Image 1 (cartoon, rainbow, N blue to C red):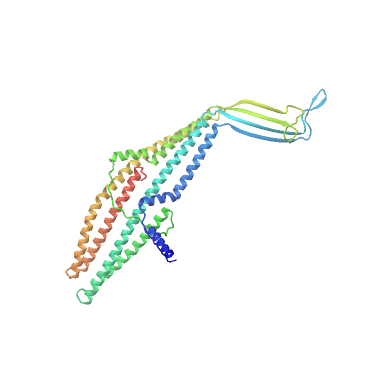
Image 2: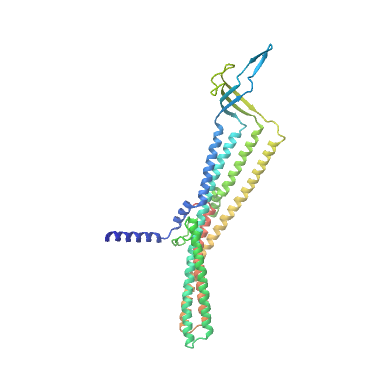
Length: 430
């Protein structure tokens, strides 16, 4: 029994340790992609488009049909022959038939509709890729947002602790008559202000965690932590190369290209109304006076036929021409939208590349400023302990340190966010 309890305790500790392990950003991405409603929605759309393509492909194949009719006449049909009534059929008439029709030529409409369905499926696949990239970008942004919120909370807590200690020193000095009451009041106000900032930072931290949890498909109040990351400058291609890659693979551009191809197929389907429809028909039928149409005393019991049917609507007051012109105008509009989108993508790559460059340079600057601010705080605090400086100088030094720490963390995680934005801008999924 003692060994059993020991095993249970070890298992619980193992589970607790596993649950406490922070997620890496890659693990968070995989979890979000698995649980994202957006991804599931796009997958359902893709499946629907696949079924639509199958339905359009079926138009190439023959169609089979069957029909059954029954009539009960008030009088048996007859004809007059030299004044004599000759019965030509029974009052109960049963008829059934099976038929097959095979399209031979439909003015390219079937081909165009099938092509439209194929393009629809391809479009859904591109939209799936677009959704994946959007989710990946959101996860990275929220992960860095949570890391920044954690650091902001740490800075706020450290500031509250330091200013509370300074308030204690100021109170002692005031009680001993070394500093005026105004110095103590300044320290108290500064400590209260720091506590308010800490409360705001705590709320921001909870909000960042809830946002990430929801994106991961968890309950908003679940426990989640992200493993800290150090900024690493990747070897990036030349800017022109990244612009070329983005214009070649970005889903937004691919979607417009698919839409232009769809308009071309739509125009072909519309123009099919200029041509006749030709199909091969085959039919077998039986007629009789019983439900199975197996007996017929008046005419042949069964018959079969094979034929060709052609239909041609050759005039509709310009309807086909107007519909074709409408499709061509829409296609031209999409072509202009594609050019605008290419320009937008180029600008996005340039902007995110500049953001990354600025963030990379800011890290070193912010690190130097942080080291200086820490040293300034240490010296100023020691000078105050020896009554060689004022409370105002101490509060200023702490304010400089808080801003420097915040700026350093913003630079670090801003670099990660900027890199995620650049990867999204060039169409990467990593």
